[in-house]
Image (cartoon, rainbow, N blue to C red; front, side):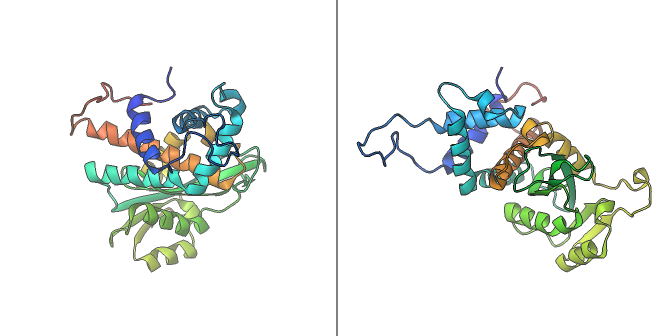
Length: 283
């Protein structure tokens, strides 16, 4: 059984491969000018997606044609190049061109997951008995398309991450409209958050502390649903990476897959193309 349906994996790989630098079949630095052939990027990419979906260790998903050392080494190269962030920006641009982003309402929220191996982006989790955890702060449009992601330790409060998260969304999408309403939960109920929103020229609906959540649910549900979709990927639920840039490459790959999934599902009723999926259910 394939890790992902071809309607998701193939367009992701096409854009990912277009951003990769051209490499020779053999290592040019070898003194004899010959060496064993370099493992293809497509093979390594499929192993990376397998690790993202199932959360398995590289030793478990390695094959005779692609060792776990090759996966780790190639991941570090791609993380240094920032390819996953660029692929996510292309996916968001395609969604905006074909469906249209709704940037009038933006929701921001954080999500804490496990990080048992610690690392650069881990911290003591306040909701899991002080174990190591990872927090991702995500900004979404009104439909739940992930626009920007910031990773930090689980012990970081949501409010200081609001500015970097909106900045990451601006980097991925471009300048935001002048009329933006930011929907936030009670974790952002502070003067610092309000002053930041006012400085940016936006309005905000912030849940008040001490008021029951169902009464002031607001329009935060798209980002909550997006976090649920992203938690479906095993590597995000239990991140064992210690390198901060490798953590980010998995976060943006998952965000790209969420964006592509939303794009294909909504485009089925507007467009026709070869290989159009026959069902709306895309895993």
